[in-house]
Length: 116
Image (cartoon, rainbow, N blue to C red; front, side, top):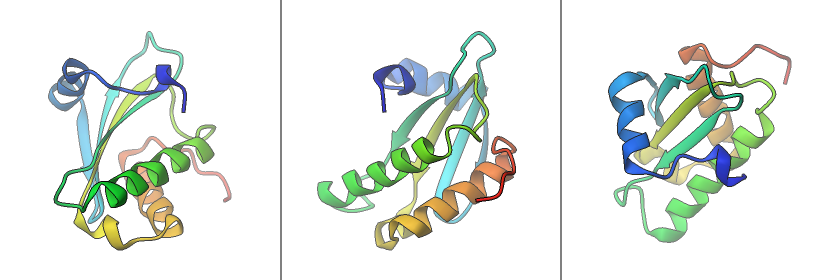
């Protein structure tokens, strides 16, 4: 994923937390902030040490990035997303992570319904 599609700075994370709206399921919490001036979406990831050691956390982040890469045509643009992973994610495989992430994105109303 290119750098311009990522949220890295603490101020940007805080802006999404304070001004955006959130949606959650058992595995993920997602914050969404509208950015009408931005022609693309950006994502920020938060995977706590409670999830597991570095290997597990990095795997979870790879799964989330890959899911967004595959769904980029269906995810609403001009928005910032912050995804917070919860504990059950550490035992999930890629297909389960993708299904759960799609569920919470649909719940937040930012995923267009296409056949998968």
